[in-house]
Length: 316
Image (cartoon, one colour):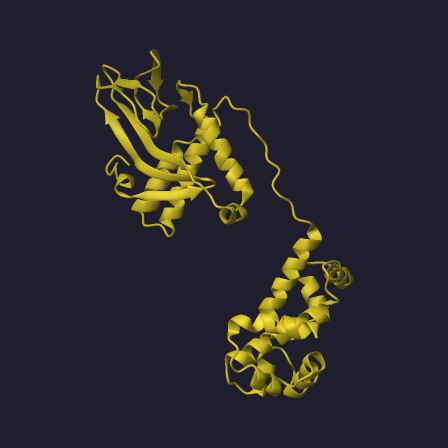
């Protein structure tokens, strides 16, 4: 970072974490020559200072604090402070200036996303706001993440933006651990194992319904016994595994019939039916019409209304 210390500053990095928006204003290495003084000033954003080399002093709230390698301190928002390098020794600072603003969310937005992440972001900002105005030992190694962000960009790493975002969040989280705010544990929302297994099973069916599938094969993917999986389907309001598979295949067949003009025989084979004759048998038993009759009745129906039509037929 010594040779291209302001590389990250050239980027307009903005991201969202939980219920907050973040904009990186500066993320660089600064060097204070011996005796250099930065007169009293303040920032509206959060400013993190890490000392990788040298020594000096910082004045915050009229208190003078000694600085040396391995310390960090937070100024801002709106903390008046003055920095000075030692009279005989230069001092380096890794500086992160970052705007952090709460985001107003609609009800739809609040229902999406992980509440666990929102909780962690909220706890982190609360802890930073209560960080004592004095230098702290960088015991959680936040400083190393500056180099991670720098390398992600300068080395052209795939996913550089995501790597920089993760590095910034790590700096915030590790600094926040020095706060006086007690650690507020969070119990993430839990899912029942049977709901989870049902979701895994049905997703596997959706991905592979066009191939021959057995109850045992799907159960092995979870893995549980075939009897247990059959019981889970009934718990979730489905008659059986075979009924679910057949219903899903039929829904895809109906979509294919409405959306195009391919032969019924081809559609049958593409959607898991061993033959067009078997599709005709299952289709007529279920919908009281043949696939060709279904096509003639629904040639003007768009694909977006397929589900509604299927529900209507299922009720009859």
